[in-house]
Length: 348
Image (cartoon, rainbow, N blue to C red; front, side, top):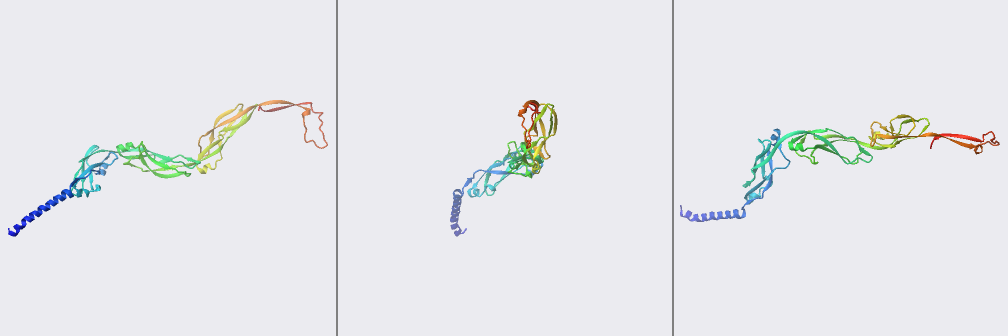
């Protein structure tokens, strides 16, 4: 080694030591090692569709997460965002029941990670069950109108999914929302699986997702009741009155039918030789397409009274003659002194 090189060796060694000291200072003071705050990271499950084809699915509705904590130099830790932390768990090969499934976590950069190595997952069988369809009606039609007979199809649908979720479905529901309608409603509505608390059940599949609904909106109208009665009184009696109670009825039906109806007939009946009051139920005859809202019958009331004969004595002097012609007079001498008049009528 030359003398010049030996003279430069010491400055070189000192330079390296100085640089090392500066690096240690920077790394320990300016960019020290830190431990980041733990973060809840959602787990992405692999081979979910393959497991579904095998008839298995994850039980429960909540998202599965694990806590991941990263550590390392401050600049490296701070450069990692939550979206860059990926957690995965492979379901393939596991069976129905509770399983401890390995979790893998990947993070970019030169950092260390700490996380639970397993996640506890319950797999359950996929089942299908028929559930009833219910169409609920909210709101009311326009005044003077009422709801007709609701019809819809289908009335049951198959629900598929995790056993616990399918079993929690109480009914498959659709809703018709009314706002002063006066016309019939024919529509297609989406179906939703609902539990006993009225909440929608997620993560189940409906074989049919819509329902065809037909909801007639009927017109209301109040009309008179017309009694079709043929009645005769017995000997010595006379019919006083024939009435029905009530004398009006409210009917319902499609507007084009109801507009042409002004009264509703009773059934036709014949009653002979009546000697006492009669009260009986008689049916109302509604035209096709119209029905009674509150009643389909009326009460028939027939009252009779006995005939009574009464005699009145009239003296000749009480007889008054009217419209006597000019120049004429009445000769009463041939009229009996006392006349007897008999009146036959109802007692009243």
